[in-house]
Image (cartoon, rainbow, N blue to C red; front, side, top):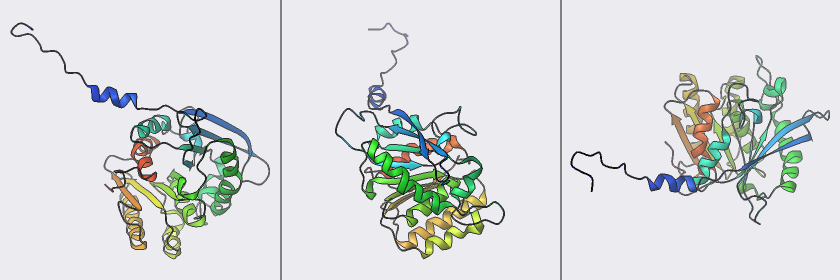
Length: 280
């Protein structure tokens, strides 16, 4: 026994060590030489994150297509710091959420054209349908052929932030036979004078899961637009906790680090892991 006045030993933390034991690190694959959506044969770089155990078992995984692929995993290739998505995916795996993530690099000067569902007279856009069709009809068959994906729509999703969030929402309604869930993070709902609101309102209900979020430090207009979209989705039948999860990040800014941090809990909601569908 320690003598009187001695400092007691620090308590052990087995729960934390156990959590680390269940953190599963995946691997990255680089796909080069895939003809991009430009239609002129110019290749588009694609990076694929595979869950731990891929290739070692006969198991198959859901697949999530994400935009701005150069910003997801590597600070060296990102514009303003990466999401550190590998860390986020490892954390999500502790919650029972694992998926094959396909990160598609953006087209640089073509980014707004590819991610813009409508023509904005100030900044351009209008090529999102063509870009999404390329994802579905060109890239997706290649991914399905090379990796152990679950190939039905309920296990195929699309996600992104900012303009990537906008095009993900549009893609869910444009190609509902392909996508069964969408991650819509800090979406650029202002684009083309808010044309996405009328578009979504006109579309028939799609049986799908939607994760929608925004940072409360992104500005009043951004927050108001996100709340407007939430109300619109609820009115269409996307019930919170079932088909919709909505998150307002009190400290969230419009930045890759914030999206990567939130993605740790966004992925379980998108994959319908029990206990992770509630809004907050």
